[in-house]
Image 1 (cartoon, rainbow, N blue to C red):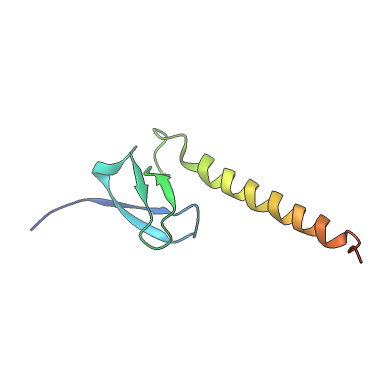
Image 2: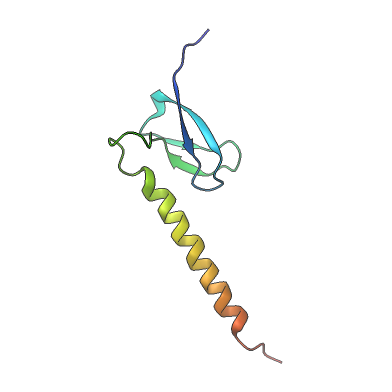
Length: 79
């Protein structure tokens, strides 16, 4: 029986709370739900500063896509 230790991190793609083994800290992992890729990092630790950056990049992408879609919906449709 394994006594593995885990921490919880949200997937930046789907938002699911993932239980990740401590030995994967700092390594690239894949969400089993959506296949989103992320770097395993404990948000409570200051050691991994890149934790929030992936989530912020994803948020920026979604905001940009939303703005583009709004602009396209306002354009007159060709006849």
